[in-house]
Image (tube, rainbow, N blue to C red):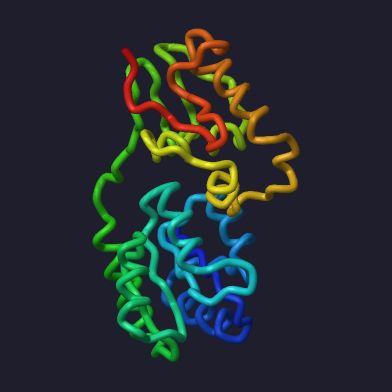
Length: 228
């Protein structure tokens, strides 16, 4: 079965060229013309690598890289017309595996893609967040308290993961919404407060006296690192 590559690129001509060239080299390339479409595909399917344009019409490529990397360790090669060293440094710090400035030779892209795929031929790390009896498994999109699986919607799980990944930090509602901007927020049809309440009902011993997911009056929410 050919390796699956997700190309997030708004330049239709360039995307067609890359798709054709990599296709001729044995890869199956799926093209997304916007950041949102690319993120949706990433979350719906399993890809072996992602080619990500930095300059997208609806998404900052660096933010999208950060969002994708928070989901899993799929190799990312950033493609961009920007050539400044600082852009490259920021992209790599956010989790990109390589960086290729435009214009580029298709053969160089192929070589770099193969290189990041070779580096990724190891057993993938299965990252589970553990907080006492609470376990959050981002890969499975599942939270457990002891042996019980929490009944959370996808939106509620993503909200819980955002808070847990920043345990100990107070997050305002604006910060949370910004972190969730990769989702279709139109479907996030209830306030964050309502979703937090439902998360508490699943993860807290006493939802009326939360000790894990705490409201900071006038500031937002904080996910407690530890419990007594």
